[in-house]
Image (cartoon, rainbow, N blue to C red; front, side, top):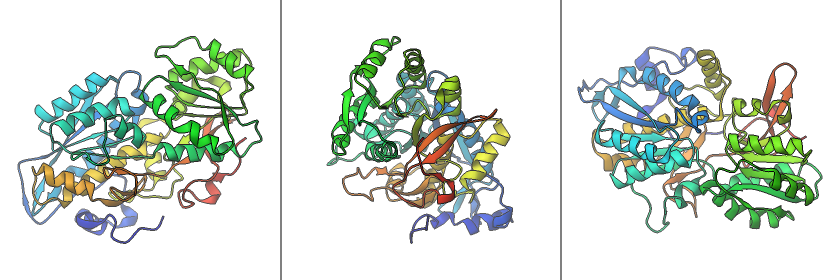
Length: 434
């Protein structure tokens, strides 16, 4: 994607970083250099807090967090310059335990015990929203991602006429996932009857509020859309309902564990929709592998992949380089969250470099809200779109499908069209959902 004039760069110009490290662009390894300056060294450190679900039901979303954070500690080893002084950087990492109350407590500890300058957080609204609320209430800048922006904004009682002052978010919205799914559905002939898996939780309610009217305009009808109660373990009545109504398209937003229960029952009843596009549950290789041989050709949204055509504003790394390094260091396949966790540090680093003095939290929050930066997940512009909260920067989205490879498990391939043809190259796109 072409770099828009005036975006990114600024006080973190990559040539300056390379010159300080004594390296050329071609020689720059992933997360190998840090900031620096001819200014004086400071004993006070820049403190970055990070809340991650390292344990519990959302732990799959936090797998990339440790790796990226360790990489950033290496990147920051020479410090970061604010004004005329260079400061050491400390990253304080706390586990939310996949619990909303614990996430709020972790944020509170970062603010009042660790005295952080900024808080970073991702991994669904159950982690993001309670952390953001703590930061807003206590006037600490917070940058978040990995939750649809409507869930982040409306789920926190957002008001377009009274924007949040301290909390900022970048991700795609429900309008984007609807567009992506409609594009995938149009690739196969169906009866346009849709069955929806919308749990009675904030994500499910957000999807249920946005999808029906949007898909009706394209000729699709909801054959069934019951709100699934929390802690449901018996999906046999729902599967029977979908099957009796002739559902050809299955969509929804579920946890991996809940979808696994549903899908096992679907297999048992021989319910075979022609198209499956389910958010959240099918994001990660481990979740798909747990479905065994029954996961072939299931579809989901793709936030980020090794074939996306972006670069890190910090290291210059491509998505492929970041994914390869992650696999080499962890032994695990790449994850969609990987690029977004890296981008959290890109946004925080650029904003910190733009403030005049360390400790001016209001100036830091203001700097975040004015950022225009190219990141490894695409160009971000806070406050840059009409009818979108000024605290939100949108990211691109594309469709994907899990395809079984002989003796190699599953591979997530890009299918359909995206909102911007420069997200992935045509050579990396598989045109047809199968």
